[in-house]
Image 1 (cartoon, helix red, strand yellow):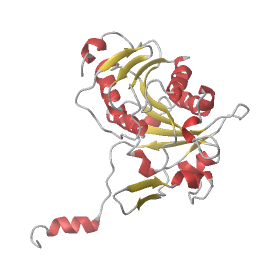
Image 2 (cartoon, rainbow, N blue to C red):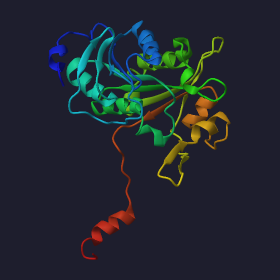
Image 3 (cartoon, rainbow, N blue to C red):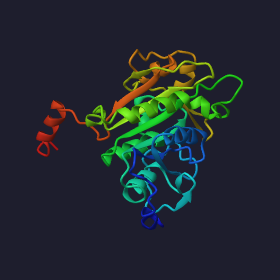
Length: 280
């Protein structure tokens, strides 16, 4: 990656206090990113290593080369969130205490979303490095007269997300949270001016899946995730304890997750392996 080794010696991450690598997938100039940067920088040494532009829904896509540019907050990378983590932890800012990814404008809820989210994938990449990580996202309900992308334009609306992220960042490592957890996936409701602080609820990812595909018969397929509409209408069966239910009810959802894929014993599959290749 061009210039990485040269920039690694610039001392961007100071060691006097908790040092944090901050990334996202909306791009380094996104309002949620700046809201989180400002909130954390009040008490931590924060260095941005974030995509130059929007990299939403790229998952853990990785590049072989990515140009790096100096930025007033740290570094902007012509690449994906996973690129930013590898570049940051290997070359630009290798001695950080933790990684935070966010604050994403748009929730990352449900088991099926985790693999496609660039925000969450950055935290997963960090977990493979053994560095504690928090993925932080804001639930923007959408609907109504104001289009989804025109909502959550003020840093103050990210207050529930930035406050909860800072709290966990200050306390989770010393509390031993990351001894059994690879990363935390945090989703917070939007904060209105007079809203009280949203409480934290420890959750598990919902397993509800409602993707649809419609073929117009003329070579075009339209894909739609119906979950968001159902969340706005409170028309989804997720029980208490799931991430979606918590956020819709005004709580900050925090799911403790592991990065390596887990395996389970499977007698039927063991039997097939034992019978191979004699039965072919």
